[in-house]
Length: 284
Image 1 (cartoon, rainbow, N blue to C red):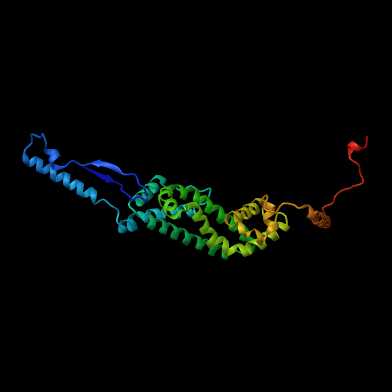
Image 2: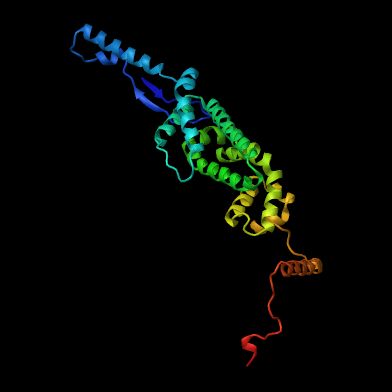
């Protein structure tokens, strides 16, 4: 007869492997050994089969053996800096995730992963809350960059859970869910403070590094495009084609805006130069 190894329900579609297990009768057929030998062999086979059939992961085993290992690995990935290397066995993490899914603990594993990352993000949000205003933009950028870098490692090792549980049963994607956690637990709590700081910093060149400004504004847009109306002029500086198309009826308005900008630049010491001089090509 055949027993199935790694069996999962149809929704998870785990790959089943057939393991041949001979019956006691098959073992003794055409055997010249004594009946004691046959009985001994049969007992060994039955004992081996029983152990195999009982080799399933219980909820308690998941909670005490597998999840603690996964939790420690996730903690390392979330807290390491992008330039820091931490020795982690990605193969072992993937193997644990694979076994948890095949042993029908997908829902529990997903719930624990969401809880772990949510707890981490709440701590990140608290640290940002304690940041002085002049450091908030830079600190938010560091938090967002570090988190997105960690997802480049977390999502691939949980790909089996993503494919056979999140996509199949929840009709979602793991990376989207994890980015939504950052949006809900970090960005949304600080966006009302960040946007005025960003607008002020943009009006004073080099108060904040241009690369940091671009990273934060683009990050906010990627998290929640519906934040654009809160600061349309700011987002349009860094996100192409988010403004509505120009209309011919609005040309006088655009001209007035351009004139105002030129006046502001002139008042701040930006000279247009001597407009009376001809170009060198026009002097001949």
